[in-house]
Length: 498
Image (cartoon, rainbow, N blue to C red; front, side):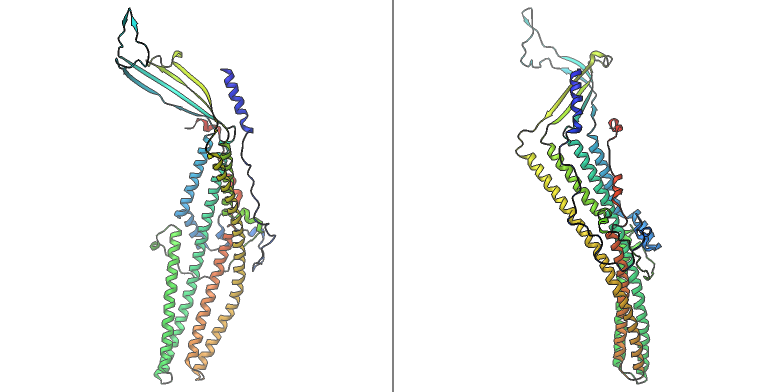
C-alpha cells in the first residue's frame, strides 16, 4: 500500500510546476496617455488636500441637502441594492471555485432488509447436485447495513482548477468594480437632477418676476387706454405677452415636477411621497482636481471592470488549454458493511479501495481546439473593449473640461447681456411714457430681458451639472487599489466544510 501512496504524493508534488496557459499582464492602452489635458480648466489647479472625497465625491459641492439625498440613495436605491446582491453572488461563486482545490468526501449510509426469490436465476452457474440429486434453490431473507465513504481529489497538474479560481476571482473583482460604477452613475445622476431642479427653481423665480412687471405694464397700458392715450392694440399686445409668460411659468414648473419625481425614484421613494423644498440655485462650481490623464486608468471603475474582464478571459484561455492534457483524479472508497447491526463496525466488516483515473482526450472532433480558439477570440475582444473604455474616458474628461471653459465664458457674457437688457427696458419704458416711441419697443424689451435672464439661469445650471459629470468622468474619487480586498483564497478550514 505504501508504493501507491508514494506515487500519488509524487504526482501531487509535480502539480505546482505544470500549469499550462498564458500568464496575465494588462495590455497597453491604445495610445500613450498625454502628459496633460488638452483643454485648460477655467480655474486654478486645486491643492492635493482638496482632492475629490473618496466614497462621497458629492461633498465637494458643500450642499447639505444634496448630501442627505445621496445618503438616502446609498441606503434605499433598488438598482444599487441589486448590484450589491450581484457582488455577494460573485463572492459565493468564487468560493465554489476554491472548493475544487480540496478533496471531496461524502457518505451514503443505508439499511436494507431484502428477500431473495427461490426461483431466482442462476446466472449461468450449474445447479448444485447433492448425492446425485439437484439441490432446490431456497428463498432467503437478510439485512444489509452499509456505512460507505467516498473520497475524490483532482490532481491539478495542468492548472485547470487554479485557472478556474483565477477566473472566479477576476470575475469577482470585475463585479466589485461594476458595483462601484453603478454607484458612481446613480449618485452622479442624482446630483445632476438635483442641481437641474435647483436651476428650475431659479428659472421659476425669474419668470415670476417677469410676470410681476408685465402685470404692472398691463395695468399701465390699461390706465393709459382708459385715458385715451394708449390704443387697444397696445393693451392686447401686453396681455398676449403676459399670457405667454404665464404659459412659460407653467412649463417650467412641469419640468421641475419631473425632476422631483426622478429624484424620488433614485432615493427609493414613490414619486408622490417626496417633496423637494424650493431653493433657487446660487452655487458656484468648485475647482475639480484633475490630476494627470494616466490617473484615469486607476480611477475609473468602468475601466477596472473592463481590465478585470480581460483577466477573466485570459484565465478562460488557460482552462481551454488544460483540456488537451490528462484529467487526473485520485479516488478512494471504504466503510463498513454487515448483515447484522451489532458487528457493523468490527474489523471484518471493513472494506476499502484506492485508485486513480487519468482521462486523456484523444479524438474530440476538434471540440477542444475550437474551444481554445473561441477563448482566445473572447480575450482579444476583451482587450479591444478595454482600450475603447480608455479612449472613452479620455474623451469624457476632455469634454467636461471644455464644457466648463465654454460655459464659464458664456455665463460672463450673458451676465452683461442681462444688464444690457434691463437698461434697454428702462429706456423703452421712459421713451414710451414720454411719447417718443410705440409700446412695441417696450414689448420687445420685456421679451428680450426675460429670454436673457432665463438663459443666464440655464447656463449657471449647466455649469454646475457639467462639474458633476466631470467629477464622474474622473471616477468620483474611487481608486482601483480597493479591488485588492476582493479576492477569495483557499483556506485550510474549507476542507471540513460541507
